[in-house]
Image (cartoon, rainbow, N blue to C red; front, side, top):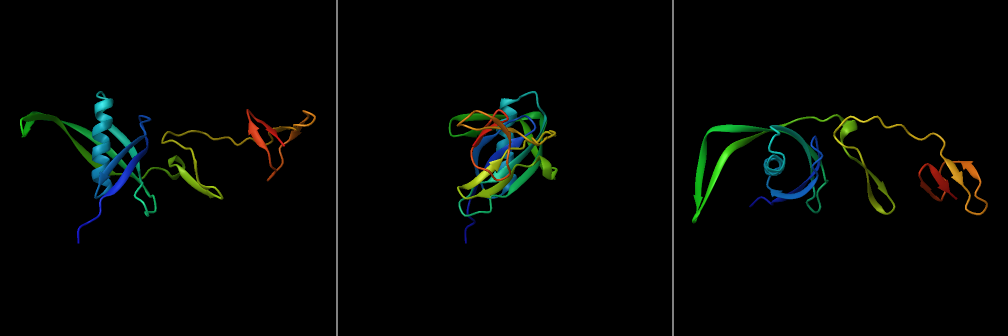
Length: 160
């Protein structure tokens, strides 16, 4: 039985690169493709840490983290495909790494589907807002935010 190809996207990296769609049999081969694109866009970089998220329909949408290293070749390798010559000046080495859990993007399930909670791969201190003032739409009075209350919040102010 032939293995099914899977799809992946870059969910985060240490160079703030996100996105793309990479089709491969394994996450590591998708990481190589993604790293190749990142190294083309950031030619001065030689090491990149990236997290891929599986986007295959019906999958668990797991995250896979890798450290990609660009290794320059001593002699360029020239490959001819049809009438086109392609010159490879570097190769990419991939190694699976464990990124701290607080640096991954976590996902919360809500009534409306899946709502991503944004965290990037760089360490950031997240300070929760203890009591955001609430603005009552009818009389514009500021009130402390209530747990589980309705309304919407904007710029540390909430409306009921």
